[in-house]
Length: 110
Image (cartoon, rainbow, N blue to C red):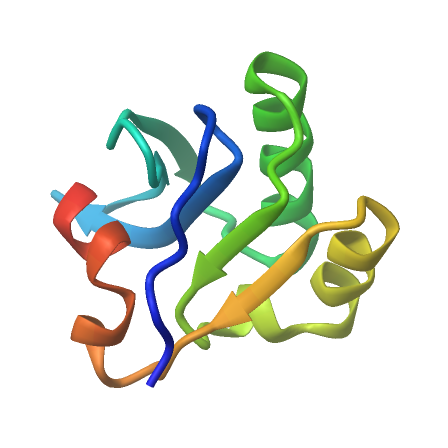
């Protein structure tokens, strides 16, 4: 079991997850200090490449976090996304894919 981290500034630690509404996919990225959610429309594509591009836009807008917590979804576990996290120096914590409570912060934002 992973303990929650205690961020000291906004957007230092964030959680992310994908969700679908009315047949459309979205990515939610939520700040773990303030709870501020950012919703990104995914269109028809939520691949690791597209997810990486969405995070680049997010980093441009709010800065690069030290930690990212996600579930074990395929977009987040692909080699391309993992390498992206390493290049940007982000500690990527992965919770259980089929146990939503383990990524509860992102689930609450959904």
